[in-house]
Amino acid sequence: MDSPSGLIDNDDELVDARFFPNPMRGNSILKVKTRDTIECVENTVIYDLLGKEQNVTCIQNGPNELMLNFSGKRPGIYFVHVEAGGRKIVGKIAFIP
Image (cartoon, rainbow, N blue to C red; front, top):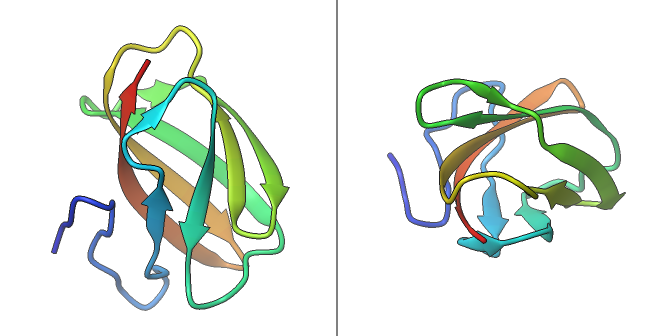
């Protein structure tokens, strides 16, 4: 199941999450709404629609907040893969410069 807010089907390891603001503009703080608090993000990878990994600076800005720097990226849909606490959070976001 896919929704405009970025929710993607979950399995045993996947956390139910929503990313906002969506769409995001420029350098944004992406909030991750989950049932549990994310204290420490182990890894974040951003992919474009073609599955190509994007070089996007990601800094954890606090519990459940990631600051993403999309400077120089093209407008479009991107997939955010976050690993935290041994679980995966996967969602899609729209980027509008």
